[in-house]
Length: 328
Image (cartoon, rainbow, N blue to C red):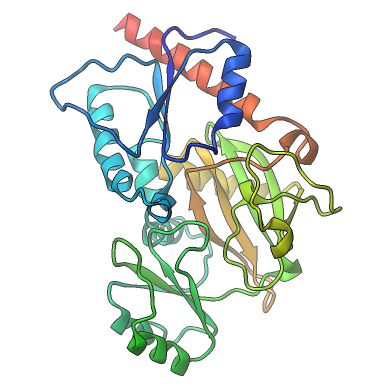
């Protein structure tokens, strides 16, 4: 494997999620540069960006940690880098898809892939009208969300109308939301398929208890056998929520669909989540993620360390990009 010259820049907002990747780089002696998206600036006239490539790890849920200023700014920064011709992993197109569940549904529709029926609204007064023709229960889900923040369930049209009138519906920081059918999960789990370099990496089933919308696999801290997983970060309430995880091999047609989704979305590293509707057995894709923390304790759960694979990918991409720049 060829080594790159010049650091790999990691653009990120959360200061704890990326320790496994930094640890892997340090063990290899790979130069890397941390760029803090919480407080940042750039000069549109400057062409001096001294890194081999930039890996965008910005989180759309940054606003839940008081860092909303980094979200839309990131789109402008990525556009600037791409105009310079810099290699960006999970660039502007990927992050645009990441930050809009409405765009994700339009993407799935364009590919002819199934997803939970939904309508898009920009004002709470439209929620009850948008729900007409949908099966209840429905959920109101902020367009730009993260870890279930702001999602509410409504069992009847009357309940939804009351919530709208009371001003309790949350549309999120872009004042856009989905009114979407709530899907009861067959087997009590959702499935997440991860890709690296746009190709299938592994898949996991995430089991949960109750109507829990926080299905971030990076926060799962138990196997289905009840073993505690070791991780630099682990959600304090994982045992309370009853969420567990196991590896599995998805059908070939699912892998092909996920790779198509990621190709069209421009996502090189990320995951797609799907659910099987317990009412009729339909498989429905419902979330496209350009931000992946990988499963906790990967070697034990999926049989290898995803961060080692990620480091390999970034090093190779950086070396290839520098070779292209040198030849230009």
